[in-house]
Image (cartoon, rainbow, N blue to C red; front, side, top):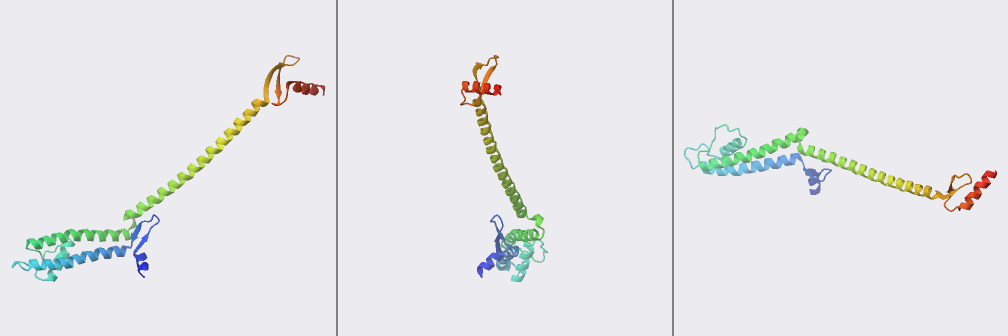
Length: 202
């Protein structure tokens, strides 16, 4: 049961990054906000009730005053007159602005996906991974092509070596004074002349 709830509240994206459910994040933020307001209202009502000029006399009045201060509305119908009360309201203002801004941003990110920087970051990371994979594929193809070219180069060298050994002059001339080239590295000069004589007799 607990595992199912956890899976609903949190999931991992394709990069292994935890993503919390939007409703859960908003609920936690609002819970923290109103928990603080609920506690701070007791303090505000207690410190304000000691001043004869105070208009925040009950917990209800204090809760309303802190709610308005945190939301930056501030109707002015209830306001602190003591230094301690003003300090509580100021703290509530900063905490409330931060948490309410977070709630608004989270909801906007959910409803308007183009404002979600996390989505853009994941898209960029995915594109980068695709580029890296493509470059890796090109690198392997280039390596295979270089290896193939190296093999072709070695074969060409071997063929050139064979041509050099199979056709080279012995430094002799025939009856007409033409330089004689022997074909076949194991063929002797006498055998070559004999072969030529037989070819001429035919």
